[in-house]
Amino acid sequence: MDSDPIIEVEHLTKRYAGREAVSDVSFTVGRGEIVGLLGPNGAGKSTMMRVLACFLPASSGTARVAGLDVFEQSLEVRRRIGFMPENNPLPSDMRVREYLKFRARLKGLSRARSRERVDMVLQQCGLTEVSRRIIGQLSKGYRQRVGLADALVHEPDVIILDEPTLGLDPTQIRAVRQLIRGLAGRHTVLLSTHILLEAEMTCQRLLILFEGRLLAADTPENLQRLMEGSHEVVAEIAAPEAALREAWDQLPDVERADVTPVDGEYFLCRLTPRAGVDLRPRVFELARDRGWTLRELARRRPTLEDIYVRVTRPEGEEEEG
Amino acid sequence: MRVYRTLLRRELGAYFVSLTGYVVIAVAAFLIGLSFVDLLVAVRQETLPLHVTEVFYQTPYFWVLLLVSAPVVTMRLFAQEKFAGTYETLMTAPVRDVEVVLAKFSAAFLFFVVMWLPLLVAVLLVRHLAGDLAALDWRVLGVTCLGIGLLGALFLAMGCFASSLTRTQTVAAVLGFLFGVSLFLLGFVAGRLAQGNTWTAAVFGQLTLFEHMQDFTRGIVDVRPVVCYASLTALFLYLTVRVVESRRWK
Image (cartoon, rainbow over all chains, first blue to last red; front, side):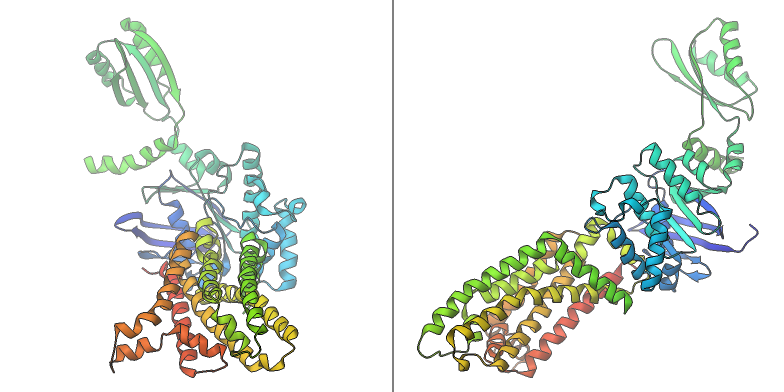
């Protein structure tokens, strides 16, 4: 990163009643970046964000926003952060404009400035035509935009969005994604998601969180490269189990093979190839040469889980070796 | 100050936007109306033995209104926000915990004052109908209002505290009601709990809410209950602030 970091997290750990939700996580986010916090449910994303937004204290370690400690200088940090919590809670009894005005005033904007900013974010988030509607009667897509508008209204340096596209339909997701991308440069955005594709499309850098630990922090391109060639091949073959295992061991490009019985004589073989190799023709040739019946042959796009596995494995192998 | 004012406006708005606010006011007006009937009966007697405010105090509706309204008014303050999740957006805005607690308490108190306004109307009507200026002393009326305000503030502070402890409004209301009733009943059993010159007797002797309020309705201001209620109110507000803070304890 060329610019100085605006979010600095060092050895952050958060324990809830004996369970570690976040353990020893360190990372930095540069000014103007859009960074995605990626991980399955329960990985510690929300906890991480709540600590950064000064809602929860860390058990140990430090987190700083714009050089200010989130625990010691909480008020100052909160002035610089726009936070949208998970599920985007909003008061259902207020009107859109009224709510945003209330939030702007609460965040310390003067009367004139808040009017100006509210008009601006209403337009920016496409809320102008619903500004007089009651929030409780809005569709989910509009509610999400109200949450975003709230996070933006005081022009914070850092915007933290917890699952901003949760529960939206594809069109709404596209609109929200576009809005977030439009914030790059002027604001620093940290958003969480459990959908790999979404993170790839919106973020310039990804942090992968799994069971409270940070597994990888890299650009989507680099992570993709890491995944290249690791498309798993799945084959269902009717053959003696021992012969199958032997065949996979002898095939040079198979890095790992799982053989499990399915039904009758068939076995399900899950093959992980060495990087950049397509195993499918070889599997077919092998079956033809030996006279085995091949029932299914397919290649699977790597899922988020595979990335986790992939990212964790080198560490494990080093331990073994 | 800006945060306090903004939050106060929002909280007051919430009372008057929701149906609950009007239902509470309607019930209060109904109970005060019932005691108004009692007042009229008393006024018809040739010589009124008591102050108008004291007659009102003698009706059973006074304490019902005071004990039940406070938890109903305060139950939503924190519990509802916690339940809806808006507590998180509120507390991640640059607001001080004290400001939040004070704004919510003040809103509840102002609403409480509005709720008691029918009493003022009732008393003024009695004065008008009776045509007897002696029946109503302005000073006595003022002191009665002070008493209602002081006791109200205490019960509302307890309700605030109850609401900060839970995320269910019903639990908050029941808890607040329990606090209020316990304190109220303590005054009656105090004599039996502690006798003689012990310090416990002295403390319990100060908690006779029923008699204190009677003094207020007669126009008597005793400094001891005033200090006692004001400090108890402060104590419960302090406890509420501590509960709000507790989420940030390590």
